[in-house]
Image 1 (spheres, one colour):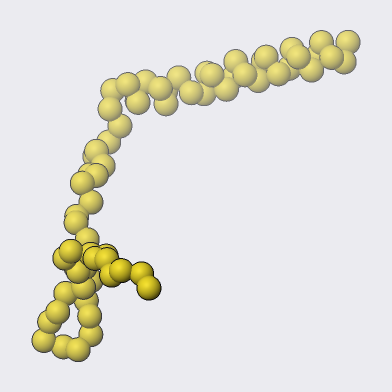
Image 2: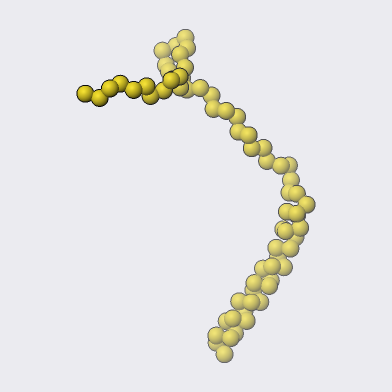
Length: 68
């Protein structure tokens, strides 16, 4: 026979006036998004199309070298 052990010191089910057990409300989410992009993010998104052009040129050169 196994000895009894305590699973929860304070139960997570709340007792109220009704017969249904209720869970406590979860804590509010600490993450609050910023209203807009920061300065570094604005610059990164502004440079992104130029990066795709550079990637496209590199892929074109690789394909050209393979087919040559």
